[in-house]
Image 1 (cartoon, rainbow, N blue to C red):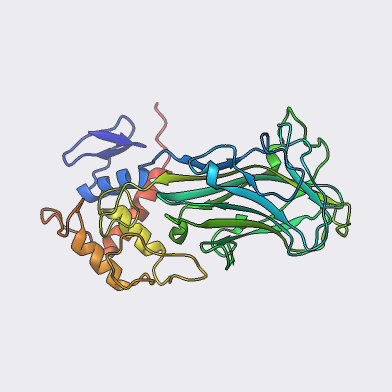
Image 2: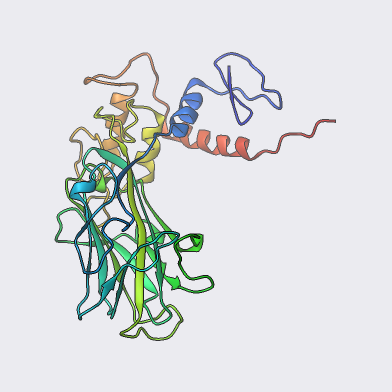
Length: 327
């Protein structure tokens, strides 16, 4: 017997201390599959404590799997001064002035061997420095796409560097940016993966107009990922087995196609390459229960989509119920 949030995971009758719910085997499997987590690795991390920028770069990452082949740089349409003032709780950051719309900071790295990516950075601007930025990505180093359609956090504001200003000892948490890339599988396992943090307007951090002496600085840029452990055909969430969690991936991306929206279904076995459709569902059914090879595990019956949807709703309702107070 296993209880998760008061829900019994068992084929037989069982009780949790607070309440009892019987779930079919595939409900238990779905809960466990959705709850599986893997430890993320640092792919590339820039602290600018070693590089101490005084030019546009490139500067190698200080840590991470691909540190020695990952680089940060800046590009401005007009002449700019680059420097390394105090970071967000550290001695150094990467800073520049004379910003125009379209100017950017950029990192060049790789996600080869990794999935479930996340991107982090800290950024702040002076009162007359730029406020509005968005993140773009490229898998060929040439063509860049806006990440905002897939994660609204990819469009963000750089706050004014005051009250308190960045310093070497105390970080400001309000300047931390997190851009989750977990479901953009086109970014997984890429030998080339670049990101740009692009100035998009002339609005300054103090809600005026960006001035030539206005600065913006970045610190603690980090790309993380989970090592790819599965090449099992039909294993859309890459956890090593074809199970109910793969149906959730299929459902969430049904109708999406590879291209500017950046989605490519992993381990689709060559079925309708570049688009998530009914054929991918049929393929998942045929592979259900598999961990390797070409066949499925015939001893398992595949739940229908309607059953899975009802199950997901039921589990949500169960998880949201308040336990009864003891008298």
